[in-house]
Length: 426
Image 1 (tube, helix red, strand yellow):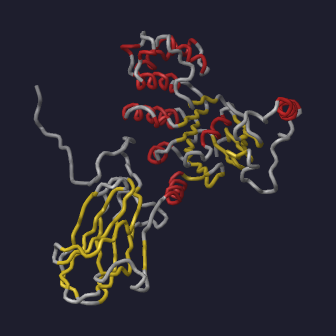
Image 2 (cartoon, helix red, strand yellow):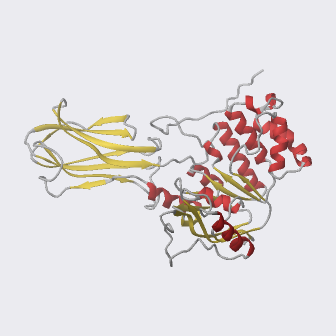
């Protein structure tokens, strides 16, 4: 087992709502003296037993009893919804802000990429800003000189390197800023949401550089991202935060699966025992409708590879009805992906069953809902059961290194191959 390079122990961070500091100069001074000089507990931070909710109506706990260790050479992905405390945790580890309670211990040089472009001056050229930003981030002039050409090439703004950055586009500005930070040589690299900005080429370069730092150079990385595919490809372990509390810390796939399953907004099953209480009318009454994902691992989330079986039952209340059912799949935004009719069938009074399977590797990732439309004689609408099922499909890329949004409502996996010919080009 490699040595521990980051140790976080019982970390809390409290913020007061609507005020800066404690609210008065006297209490700010007392707090500074107690915590900085006497090295004692913050006098204005009190936990009531094991209570880890907001301390009072004027305060909120951004982090609550967070503890974990990071070993040398590990890449740790930090996941969670907005406001869960991810950026606060990175700022404390980076020593940008202090914890209210708890301890963070670290070994080695730490470099943080939390705000891309920090230290850039609008009136200075790209060349001058490389040197200024490099100094701010801890590089020496010798290091900057040695890496200057590599930084410029990485950024892709070589034609404009002697132009004031105020004339750069936002994309050029971000590229140059990240290029400087990406060529640091820290023992620990802390990165917060670099994939939230920039185009596809920029994202690919960001992840490629971080993968090089982690796997080739053996450095430790803490990486925050909302791209689960990027986390899976880059990181060994994952830390899941929810409202400041640590929900899980361990192997990346297991933690991500638990996180995705917890955040799904699904309605996979509805059942009615009595036709009088079931949705419908004088022709049709629903009995049961269900979406069954076909998963080899029942704990895994549904993703684009997962076949989905729709099963339903209904009471047919009339005899001799030439009946068909349309299965309509919609994106969450309302666009219809397909309308699939069943084979028209002559039905009698009683319970009718239907089943349809949507194959895996057909739909794109995203949120969907299903509606059922009952039709007589292939032309007369009888009953529409709108939005009876809803589900989310997660992304899956495998070995593909493209992490941007995949285009299209569908994402079929058709046979598509390249073949080398024996023809010689002159």
